Length: 286
Image (tube, rainbow, N blue to C red; front, side, top):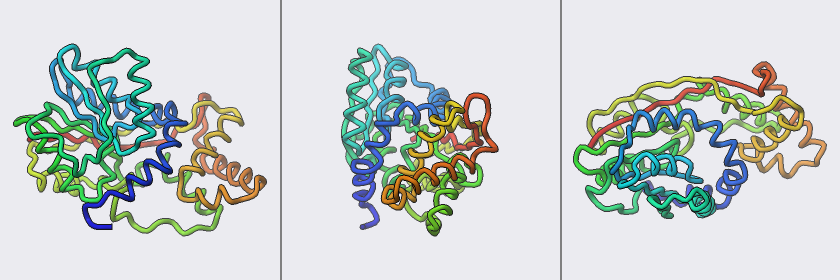
């Protein structure tokens, strides 16, 4: 894979992650929605804005942005996942929204036109670029002079046990080595403050600011056994132990789910499982 080649991510989000995210869209929106709401509030979309939503997934943020810039503004959601875009179009049609569209594309390198958007936005969709400087340069060029870039991305793993505790438990159960330090695309690719600021400045963007947001994440909604086992199954299928889990006999799968539930049991509450999470709210201008 060359430096600017996102083919691995295109394959991942179409063949592996995309179908899972569509199947569990409500859960994903519950986990990431509060962070996205804060990012949209920071972005301050207004009537008339032309908005690009990067890594829009199933389109929930694009719909919110479209409503915020109506009636004269427009929102465009872009993603590499065809299966998620199909869901996004279906949901937008069901909501009766007409000032938005969804396009299949790679925000790293596909041209969107210069000086086109007032706002480029993303909820956890900017961490998967093979060449982030090129990606942010491309997105910056699509902004009008003075246009805003606003996105939210995860901070370092130690501040996000809602992701790392279940992952470590799954790897330990199946006796798998943890992945090496991430050097490329992934959830924590933009976790370091100075790294993010440097990328944006290298891409020609100004007024770069990162603000931390920390909050509890409702990892599992519901505290009954079936709720927890559904969550554990989803986590194991979506995580690094996926292949080993799916190839295991049903009794081993059941023990793996029980082990995962035990790992997060200290965080159980009346309404489910709540664990700490932390992200950066990032803003910049062209």
